[in-house]
Length: 158
Length: 158
Image (cartoon, rainbow over all chains, first blue to last red; front, side, top):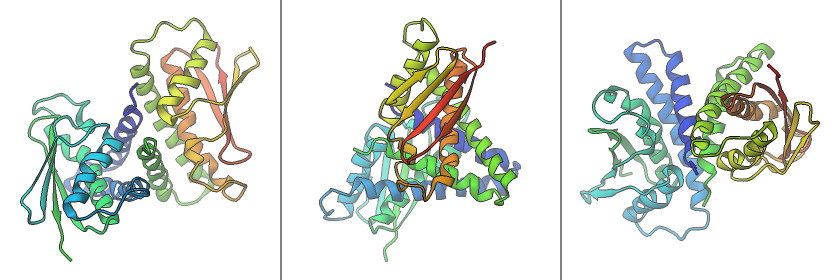
């Protein structure tokens, strides 16, 4: 019964609060997005610690990514990633066809400009989770048609 | 598997973020608590709308309070309120013996001074939920031994 609602509503309040204090300039908008990303990073770190407490060791990078797409995604967003693709050279694309944190916005292009705010926390979330598993990455997101979106993970080789 | 973790960690980040910007003066602390309470209020409003979409009409105030203690509490905190008491004159005391948002803090009195920050959002949550059901209230909280706490709801007769 609406199990995902508390998280989703709290996330919306957070965006509202952080962006309200920004003054509307582009630089301020960018700073809000960075703040959200950083918060996501720390939540991702905490979350993966709890989720991997009793799991077996991951055998490789792909195994780690599958865990993010299934267990991690289900824990946060109550569904799995719909499609995972990779070029086998450190780039992964995670596609969610009905992303929870966009699901309250109208489909179509009307609110497309607001999408980055609603994706920044989750980019950080994935980056934080991977970071705690020893995988350094850059995570970006794009939306073409709401509420579907794609997260691109670029692994940073050490 | 750790279903309550995303909400709990996001709530902690929120407190961290809001209190970080406060300068440590008592007035600023009070303002942070008020901000958290207000955010809780709006989340509570949104949440109760979804939860009551398909429920039957509530027959009285006590019936509303029972819904808060069972369905509403379970949705947010993954457990029911352990004890509900009332003086039948508009005061209700909701006791949670293991409150999720305090469960990561050590038991005992060491961090007791930080408790108000961790309860403010939930006070607002309850007030917002009741408000959307047409019940105006004042909600306060107290902790004697972590992680148990009591929420007192004073109904404001119109």
